[in-house]
Image (cartoon, rainbow, N blue to C red; front, side):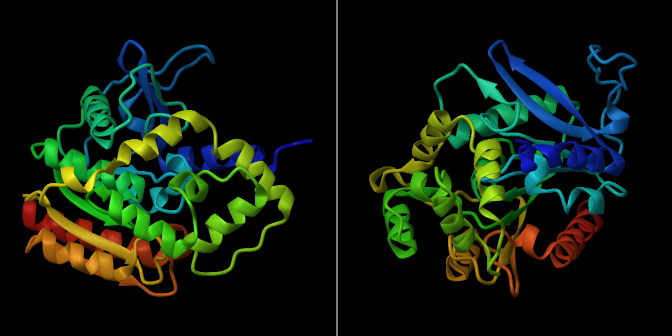
Length: 314
């Protein structure tokens, strides 16, 4: 029987190509590869199927990097944002390690390692400076990028995420949501588990036939062992938690007002901790999956921040 979610992939890939981005795989080092969607004008268009594209140009427009969360790879997470941005910006959509076609033979599962690999890959693609848009798990990777590579990351937009996850914060969040572990919440193994994740992540009650849930589980939740290790690699013991870094970048927190995973109050507290360079905006009638639930409003807020940022900084 045809997997309905897999069957939609060629359509989504076609829409991305129409929006002006194409797939490209970067070898960061032997054993570590990262798959991307990159601006079409920066790579060759192969004439034969087996021919691999080559990088031929650096981005000519201001660069925006869209970093996905835990439940879906890059173009699934950002499918409604890409087309809204490509006219004015060079858009790069990576798949983090163990998502999409990205993988490594290294044992490191920390957000720091994801950030290092992402920056090394972007440099190979000719990106020197960028604004990073990070969602959920991708937000934590984005914060690490900004902390470690301030010369590359000029500004950030963060949705449904935090700077770092402590033991106590994870325990409190899971207890509140009624889940025993991060894997139970973020890596469901059954239709019932996926429905529970969607009911927590989305503001509106979503209805899909069970068949579609099964197909989604089959396609989206691969590399389960490694992803479980990524979840463990996120958590810092309370003893090892350090003060929030002082980020030199401008940061915009763009939140779903009804986010149940990282609540509005947590975002407002984070704004205070991050200091004067941080702004905060919330979108009503949206949960954790704010960019998928209210894409038109999200895109308007995102583009407003990007244009005001570039006006002030370029």
